[in-house]
Image (cartoon, rainbow, N blue to C red; front, side, top):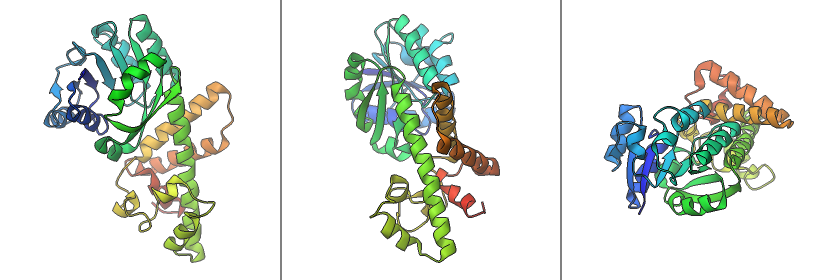
Length: 296
């Protein structure tokens, strides 16, 4: 079993670290928030006082952080991972960040004598707790081969997407599809309501025909047809609208840098921005159907 350092023990990182402990790995973690540390300790993670303490003696370091700026600071800042970990340590960043930051930090890690993978996830807090996450991994083949057995203890589907940054590219493209499709499904249900068509009838038809998609069949934005969807618990997340907006903005930043045309993605980003500006950022992103109806 491996000695693993884990930085970022929040709603996603905490359960992921706990699953590594359950699998028999020795995990030492650090988080700035005392409540996150307390939950991680209850899950079997050994507490470290800082980043250096978490990575001392680690063979593998995993990070789950909010944004690219945090990843750059935690890895390349004073007292950060690259300054504290031993050469040869395998670094896995599971944050969802911009592609440029992922590639820049991977290059810095290589200069420091460490292999790095960007490995963002899909599956939300439920997937983190159940160990069923999907990992989209960018980095070289040898690093991926070493990381895969560890990632399998936290996820169900592990996909090597290519070189450094390609995991992040896959994540933002995937979530752009999700963000757009949730708006489309929400518009369809809002229209059906105006036309007097029952929610379940629309679901039964669309889920078996050309309207079928994950946003409909797994995460339906109206209560009833999919009992596990957040719509059945007043849109308690799940995956917050603020997090979806973050991912939609990342997709637009990447599209701009790549000179790619994404008009639906751009419009969807504007709609999630408007929804969040109405004070709904902490609600599940599927709650955007309320805005499609003209209410909050």
